[in-house]
Length: 112
Image 1: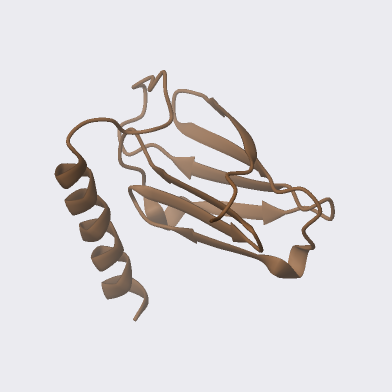
Image 2: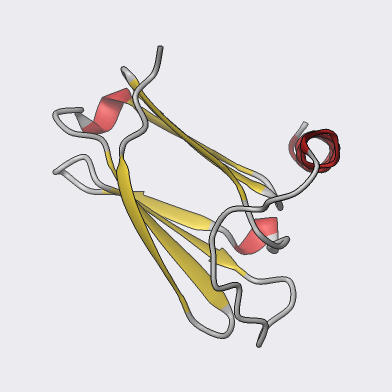
């Protein structure tokens, strides 16, 4: 079973930055996948996956993998000025799954 790595996050009025810290993992072993509603980082035995509290503009998402293995993911809020207060979406599991799947489908249409 994957281990959830340590992470922290911060927000401004228009962006959210997430810092994921999988210990002892090299840069070449880290994979980052994002959509308008999801941030997922695979790093060997670690898995960080979060359904975001609100939608973001996927085309403006960026990430950086540092030599230390720390990953920073910066997302731009679709609704600037809205303070999330928490990173993760909550609510009905089926609705969250449907939202996630739609965001994956939307991403595939843009990039495939």
